[in-house]
Image (tube, rainbow, N blue to C red; front, top):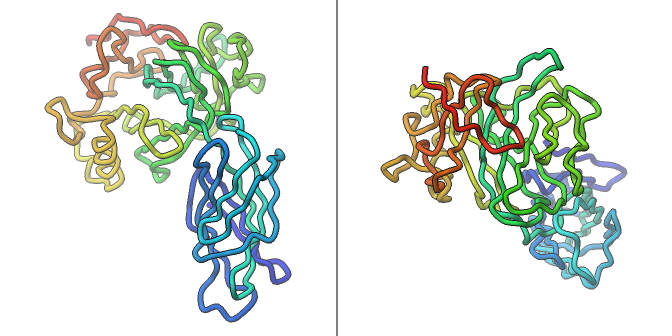
Length: 338
């Protein structure tokens, strides 16, 4: 949750554009009957970012870290900042701005955002491991594997899990800028057991360590080893900066009544309208239309059939056989049939 503080008559708001909320601050000057609120920000192009407030403001101070030379600033409810040159795709920027409304109410906003990335590659979710396990060589963590369908840059792409816990619709990872080629395998490890594990952001694919790290695939790591982020009943999807769904998969441990949870039904409707997941007869997905994950283990992963065209349905998926998990490599075609 974003936090705000009042300090010596100045409203200070801390936040991030990657997980927008609607925080507020009390009016600190003047006689305004309602608080001046910072609402959100968005990189609309590689040369422009917008900051949205609850009413028109004038920007009294503005600074970016790393530095971005500003060409112009347009005040109003939507503050439009134009840069002198194109920004790097998906780069993390910290902004510090002081806004003032017509009543002299002021609000200091400290917010982070990623610059515009119009080069995101097409990709699909390709293999999912929902279980952690121990091995002689060390612990194995859960993971989500992706396969790129075109070249591009991953910066600002977000991975979301809607799980059967209180942390529904949680953005678990946001990619840093990294250029990828077509047909690359990307593995997002959902916890980090080995502190020497590192995101592979360069052309080298052998920099990561760990039992499930792949010298052939590109590895990314979520820090920490305590929280379980992915369960056998979950909705996984990938978003661009405009909240368009790039790809999705829905898992269900059993075809029961878990759809009665509002956030599952809402997400199923959202993914259907986004053209990302549907039942085999072309309707909104119910629990019976999800990929059945009950038999999955750490070595029996949930795999996409790479030999068929993506239909955005459960028929594209299968449980691979015991000891056939392949993070960072093509999926093993041997299926678990018991």
